[in-house]
Structure formats: C-alpha cells, structure tokens
Length: 302
Image 1 (cartoon, rainbow, N blue to C red):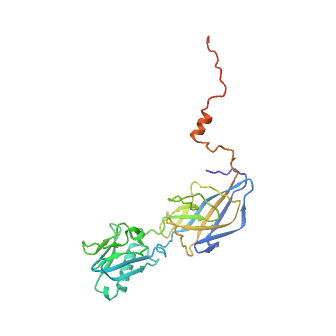
Image 2 (cartoon, rainbow, N blue to C red):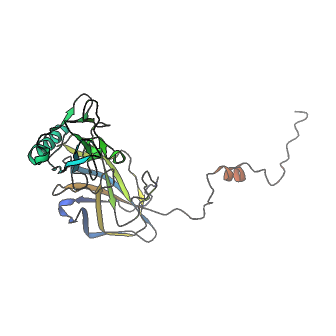
Image 3 (cartoon, rainbow, N blue to C red):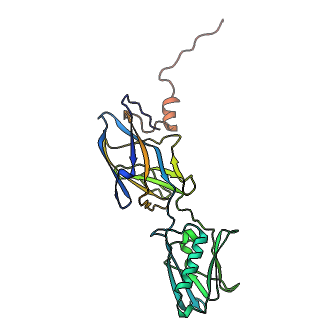
C-alpha cells in the first residue's frame, strides 16, 4: 500500500452535492482552489468519509414494468387480455405490490376478462409471491421487475400450473431492498478497480448500505485505500453513484456528502528489477555461491 513520504501538508476536500452542478445523475464539483502537485511528487487520493440518507426508491424506469397475459383455454391459446402495469415508485414492499396489481386488474380488465378472477398474494412464511386465477395466465416479457418479485430473466415467460388449477408460485423469495451497495465512481482519472467480469470500473469506493430505510448511511473506512493518480492537478471532479448492477442512482434532490483526503508521495525509483520478490530473483541473488573461495581456519591442535 502507498504511504505518504512527503513533508508537504495534506489536504482534504469536502464535497456537498447541494453545491454541485448536476447533469442527469452526474455531479460536477468545480474547485476554486486547485490541488496542485509538485513536479517531483505524485498525488495519493483516498475516500475518508461518506454519508447519505437511506431513502432510495425501489422502482424506477429500469425495473418498474410488470406484464402478464390471461389466456383461454391455455397458452398458447387465444389471448383474452394483456396487462402491462407500471409500478409506481411509492411501492416499497411485497404486500403493497400485490395490492396494487390486484386493484389494477379489477379496474382495467375488459369485457372478455370480466368473468375471470386473478389474484396476487404474498406468502409471509416462504417470502414468495403467489398468483391464482380461474383462467390460464403467464408472466411474460417485457417485464423488468423480475429480480424484485422473485424471477430471473431467463425464466420468462412463466406459465401458471394446472394442479391446483391455474396457480403460480414464483421460484425465489422477493428482494425488495432498493440498494445493497453504493459504488462511487469518478471520470477525471482511471482507478484500477475491476468488477466480477474483470472490467475496469473507475470505482473509488464501495459503500455498504448498513442502516434501515429512513436512517443515515455513514461510511468511514478503518483503513484507507490510497490511489496513485496519473495527474498533477485537480481542478474539477465528476462523481457518479451506482448500484451493484451498474445502474446510476437517481437521487432527485436528496443530497450526499463525502470527504476526500489528498496526500503527496515521492515516486519510487525505477531501477528495481522487474522480478524482485519472486522465487527466481531469490535464487539468483540470495542463494548464489560466493565468488571467491573462503579459507577455513586450521583448528587442529586447539
């Protein structure tokens, strides 16, 4: 890990999103006093603190569509009616989800579906959503809320079973947690952090959501991750917050605060062997025989 070895005074940058210029979900901070690094040193950047309210909305434009179709007599039989339901962002638990889609079905079913019932319910023992109807039905594309309600994308379309008649229990428990982790990303410089696919993501830090909804998320690492920056001047910063799926978080007017720590370091010498620290380097340099023969003392007669 890099450690500051310079006598220069360290700096901290306190960023308040209320004072940033917001473009879509990107926050631009313009620094009136630029951070300038001497020519013979480099900048170490680390995240010292981060705080934000745990008030994230679960449903947004990327995951708020629930689509199902009523069939007669059975898929791929004739379609009675197709329901495309946009879930509002005020829904935050599976009970309210079921109430909303049930009410939508009752209000919006056409004359062809008038004689059929369709009900969604949440099982508090299995944590799964269950559906029942007196007509055959399917949950189908282009639904986007599958991860939340307990389906995977590959399982769509998902048809109701026939025993008991036209019931469907979703395969997995629900996941009504809006955000599990917050990823802070920058645009001014490349940070060599990678994701599960080995892709460089420019992530400054991963913030675990460690508080209940409505409370404050506060992050202060016990050990700082210091990044050696390839630039010598910081005048502007662009910050983006993403969830664990790589989707940008739309905070609306919700603010966040973060504090960055700036340290300086003298670069290491470049005349270090590329294989230093390896077994080969150890054998060549530490286990080699001496160049000259060493004469041993005559111990006879002692």
